Each structure stands twice: as structure tokens, then as C-alpha cells.
Length: 131
Image (cartoon, rainbow, N blue to C red):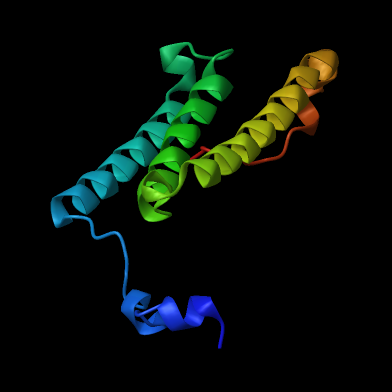
């Protein structure tokens, strides 16, 4: 038996049921926030032409998705209550993933002409969002 074992009075069972209890009102607030942001995403995608958001649609959608991801990460993955180093590593990886996505999206301007010059007669019969 090592010194650590002899001096350690608590057992693994002491920590078996440890969690970060959250009040019900907070869980409900996060739930309704996620539902509201999901509805906002759907409304924005349906009303892109009416709201004249053509060039901003992607950025607004990514912003809403990022906000939803942050709510899930902070509260349901308990990163809010984690150690500082773990938070730093988690968000650094999140930042790099976002950076890779952003760099990929910057390339879309290179082939925009090909997409806009696509013949209308070759479009699929039903598009997303059609009734």
C-alpha cells in the first residue's frame, strides 16, 4: 500500500454520484432558448428572399448554430463548471474547427459563376423549401 492509499480516507464511491446540479428553471430556459433559435433558423431559411438576406444568410445561420452549440457545450456538457485548462483546450479545438470551416467557405467565391450560370432547365423538379 502506498502513502497515497493510506492517507486517502474517501473512496471512489464518495464521488460516484457527483454531478453539477442545475435548477429546473435553468434547464427549461436553455431548452426554450434552443427551441427559439431552431425556429429562428427555420424562419430565416424560409424568408431569405423576403428579408433580402442573400449574402448574409450563411453567416447568420452559422451564428445561430454557433450560439446553439455554445449553449449545449456550456450547460449540457458541463464545460462551464470544468477546470480552466480543459475549457481552454476544448474551445481552442472549437476555434480551429471554425477556422477550417471559414477557410473552406472563403473558397466559394471562386466557383460562384459556375453555380449562377447553371441552366435553369437542368434544375431538379423539387427544391428544398417548396411546398
